[in-house]
Image 1 (tube, one colour):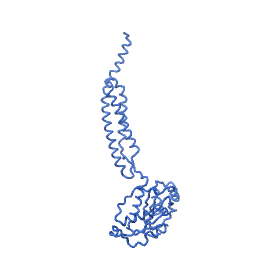
Image 2: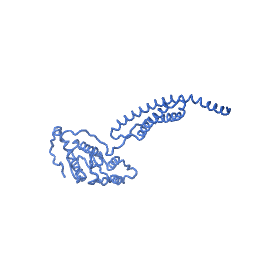
Image 3: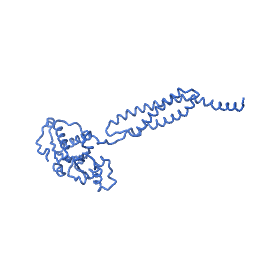
Length: 311
């Protein structure tokens, strides 16, 4: 027998024997890997349930990193399952061929587990495509419902680009305006969305511009305030929004604000305590909201309302 060959075989066996002891651990490590995978899978299921609950809230959307983590966790489940089956079916002495794969997958799974902490939450705030619902509450009584429908019917007419809703403080003008707003946000083919600006009695052109810009996610600060109107006009071009200026205490120039109205574009509702303010803002329709008593609100009676739907 060739002595050199014998010595070569002996050397190979001496290098293999200690490794065979490690190969026996491959199956044990694979079991541990599968148990860890079960924990990550359970976490993936919990995250999916939490996302479903959070995304039911308006303005909430899952973060892209969370979506990517869920996808990678699903892919990891398949890889661990396939590798585990190979380890079980492979002969003991051939498992060394899978050892590196087991260790590599173990490392990847640990990293995936660490990245699944999401300490800053699973979702982010985003504006719904048509705007946020204000949800002012249910219309109470026939009179409120009738008045809301009247405002809506007038608003939908092409020849009415702007209208005024007036009445004394506490009559329900803002409440009705919010209902109109939400009907458009929920579903109205005529408009792309609705934006309500609480002007208040002390409002300024600048505060109106700022609130509309926030709705449009437009940064006005990149230019001087003198150009804000021009920036808004440019941003509103081609859009079909209902803009509601609520609780207006004095007339404002839409040209200065940067609002351009059109039959197939933006429309405007002004609510005010003053009929004259609505007229001075060139509202094509004036709608008076009387201060109903509780009985009138429920039964649908209307007090003397000389100015209802006055042109």
